[in-house]
Length: 484
Length: 106
Image 1: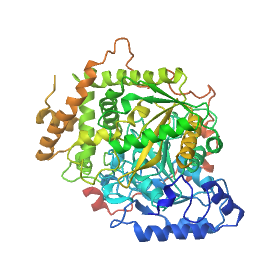
Image 2: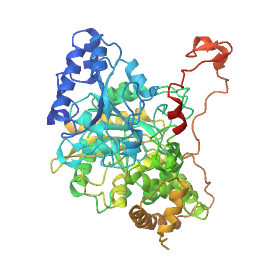
Image 3: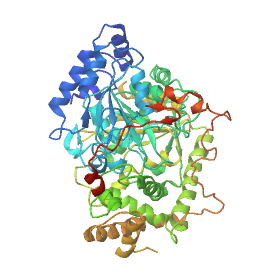
């Protein structure tokens, strides 16, 4: 992997300075979309596949080349896209990394995918993921492990690991992922790319296969803040097909990124640093990169202020009660009647569900347990209340004049493949800094802030609900400060 | 107080969820759940007095749509969107393409 793609978000594989410029050149006819798409498939053929990084689980080469040959138009003209395998697409299978959905092809397309196509983007294929989004490493997939481009013995993060790798390895310009507890930001941090999780309700979830409906969001990956912001702006907005999508104007995120990357944009910015996200056991190099990022923001004119989010330590238990409870209900639909393969010996339902992987079964059983009579109040009911307290912590900090919060995205860089597979709770803890934004419905972003032992380190920014413009402006200002 | 989840509870939950587990899987899940719930016990120490038990994360909830009725889907004549239309029915592709023996066996 060429390191230059990761430094400050500039330096693209084929010479354009940003995605927006590349798309403008393709739309104007001065750059060939067909050449761009062909080069992408050559890269995938050379370095992906089960023996390679294993980012893609399905490719749509014929249709992609056909679209590219028709001179794409729009703000994302000719931009190559990878789509997580839990977003429904026409023609290609949508399997959610599960054997249970092997061969399933949706008869409709997710709104986010449709929005990218309408803006001129070209979908190259579907990417690997932890089964139904349940995992933090893309090791829980029926289609094999996705490898980290910086060290193939390490995980890509998850659950949107394939999408993060597609962008990090230069296979595509941008990618779609989804988040329930950090599944875009955590792999973005592990793979050295930018990942954004919008406010709950900002992007339509029509065509996103449900895991935990009070938490699920569609998110985006890009090689720079500007690229990711442009992608998010393209897919944001109300959709009559998703009752939880908010009727709010689409924020001008590409403009917010441009504003943030201008000189002196950090002046006046108030950045909160919650001490709960900097525990003593934080990996030392990660802590050092965070300290450096904050120094640079200070030098650029930002005010850095210590804050407290006192209920942070309850976030992981709260998340794993609520997410599994909702999953146990959502995944009941895999019944071999509407989806899945039937079992034999009259065990139609159980037979189909035998195809679930171990982590999915673990979460369904845990979710059923916390909802069951005798345990509901002690676990599910209590978790709902603690969730509200976690959200109130954030509300109080933002009401005190803080624009954005800065934290590490993960407690340490990418871990080794197999390192945490035997200890589910250790795996759950890799989301300790990301689940809070999902629980509180807030927008959050991870961007590369340097490296540790040759692996990328991600810094996280969290903003108040619907404050994506502020989030993107601050991220672009930090991105600029890191290269200046 | 840590809840030790016995294998019998795991099997009961699996039955409720329509999951068939192998005996080794049930034993493994019992150990996993006991371990995970030991961490979840931390929630018991939080003072949740007066905090509502609601599934919405934020006080404001999700921005609602305007109180305007949507268009009636059937305002468009079905003949314009149905795959097939034979007054007054939708028509669907024929399913009886299997031989009768196979149908009975299935």
